Length: 292
Ligand code: SF4
Image (cartoon, rainbow, N blue to C red):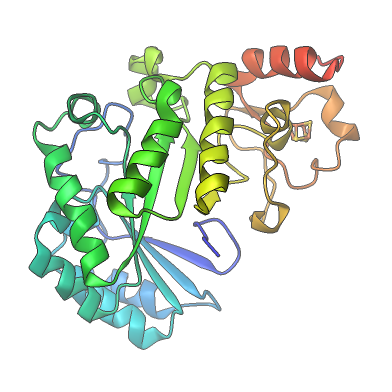
């Protein structure tokens, strides 16, 4: 089963804040990365976690990455996943090195099948060419290859094409989708990055149909940018078994009065303020609900 951090049994560790891309929607290149000793302590303290997700910044920029993967293997995690933009994995020898160290899965951020659009999004000319080489290398090295598609304004209309391209050209299976969360400084500075929710959901529904027809696994995080009721307006059902622990309303999240009567209320994180108006309109239109 595809798992992501926040789910029970999954631990996440950030090993650097550095990155070799400048994605338009990213705020994670901030703060100093933790030191080696702290990272090793964190890896060793499994606390019952079966999966370790290694993130950054871009974790492949950290020279200690193979050592951290080996440490995770020794600590007894069943699954070690790397969340990466893929650029460094264009080096086949490096891919094999990570596999030998014990890496199970590379989840590669992939935002567009069109190279010009992809390079524009990550503000790194030539990045897509490297990423495509990386996809081949990951497969060849025996590391599980998963695509991580962030839904935003430029790729929202073409989600089915992206999924089909990844599957046909690189055998990518499964695919994880998540909606852009517009509550960060980078997106506040570029509000046009936020996808129109209704059309994006319709496109996602078509992409999931491509997945179904081709036997491609998919995942949508339950605690993502949109709540389950909004996905349901497009006929998309979030798998309840994927529900993460906790249901605190974080800053910038709200619920409607109608949530009190919803069976998801105990675990749902509600609406991101920035999407609330569009979500209410969808709920009213598609479900005839009196939402306020
Ligand atoms: S609790 Fe509210 S926001 Fe969450 S799924 Fe139910 S109706 Fe939607």
